[in-house]
Every structure is written in C-alpha cells, then in structure tokens.
Image (cartoon, rainbow, N blue to C red; front, side, top):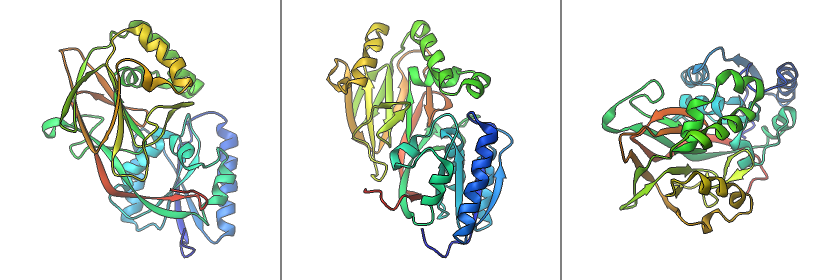
Length: 315
C-alpha cells in the first residue's frame, strides 16, 4: 500500500459473528497498529442491513484514501457494492460468520495480525461479478444496476438455504445455522431444474455455482479453477435431481473427486443467464447473501474494484 495514505475509514458490523466484545477490543488494537504507521483510522459501525454499502459510498464521495472492511462475507459484499467502480481501495480485517476473501488472499483470521499486513500491502485492481434481473427489472435484493459480488454466486439448493436461513439463528450460532438449514433443505427441497445459457450452449441443471474464487464456503472448494484476478467466472453445474446423489457429493467434495461424478459440468466464461425450467421457484445467492429468484444474469465487470493484498501474495 502506498505509504502516503494517511486516512482510512474502518467499517464494521458490531453484531456479526461471536466474541463481539473481544472483537471490538481487537479492532481498537488494529486502529493503534495502523496509527503507529501514520494512518489515522475513523470507525464507522453499521446499524442495519445495507448500512455498510451506504457508508462505503459516502467514503467515495468524501475522497477517503482507504476503506477497511471488518466483517464477514455479507458485510464485505455491502462494502464492495458501495465502492464498485471507484478507485478507493478496500483492505480487509476478517470477522463475522465466514470470510471467503480472507482465505483466498491468505489473510489470517486475527484482526491485529491482519492489520499489520495492511501498511506493506499491494493495491491490485480486480473484476467483480454482477447479478441482474432480466429486462431491467429490480427487487429489494437487486437494484436496476445489479448486485455486485466478490467471491461466489449461484442458484439452486444453496440459494434456497441462503434465502431461508434464520437471521437470528445465524447471529447466535454462526455457520451452524447454514448447516442446520442445509440438512432441512436436503430433506424438503425437490431440486427443480433451471436452464443455463453460457458460451453458446444451453444446459439443464438443478444447481449452478458461479465462482470468482477457489474457496466456496466453510472448508469447501468447488470452483477450483477460478481466479480472483482473472476476468471470467468458473462455473460448475450438477444435472441430477436426486437428493441421494446430492448427499453423495459431500464426501466426493471432501476427497476432491466431485468433477468425476455423473452430471457434473464445469467451464469458464464471463457471463451466464439462468432461468427456471418450470413454474417452480429457484432461489439465488451472491457471497452468501440472498438475491431472490431466477431469472437472473451473472456477468463479470472488469477493472471494478481496488483491494489491498498481502505483499507476499503471488498472483
């Protein structure tokens, strides 16, 4: 990171994840660490859903030199939606329920340690994904200009889980809330088909994972050919509608053999359109946040965001 950066805004969610009192003490320590390096940091706590995006957009208007995001995937998604298209860089202090970007960049899950990496970090320009309703429509989740995402999007069972997970249970139990909802959906979900248009081909599938990162969520790596610094997605679909075959995907995923299973297809492209194949609802998600139901398009937007990466990162 250029050493002439002297002011930063640190956006954090005071209610995300566990150990909240301890986390604030760690944030204060991070502020002191950066202060010792000559960076004055102002704290900006969020107070409601969507607030981090508003704060980040205001930071752009105020010509802030750096925005530091402290939170999980949801908080970071809001921040990048406020910063997208600007040249205000974002640095990361991992917290919250999960943080895919931290895993992808090799940033330790320790706020003071992560803060120490920022002053010597490297600002890199990356692409973002954007999800849009077809025909210019909008919704509470997706505005007319689209919803940007950093790491992963998708539709099918994962979309159903994200759209159904209990927010209060998520606050109390973190990632366990997703596992609980996942087990529930495995029993109840009927795996409706979608039609996937990409690369001049049409595919029928019951799930699509649209990756900008190798890491997916928790310990899983699904789009293992994706690269955050490329201008394309890696996409993976599963054509099966059998809940038993879905259950069999978990051990195959653990063992790195998912792509050898029947019905799995993977490819790279910069755009994909997903539509329900029937009148049944197919839900979608980006960065672990709900975005409603198909039809939707997902497109790569090059040169969309500046991020601070560890100096040791090789790309």
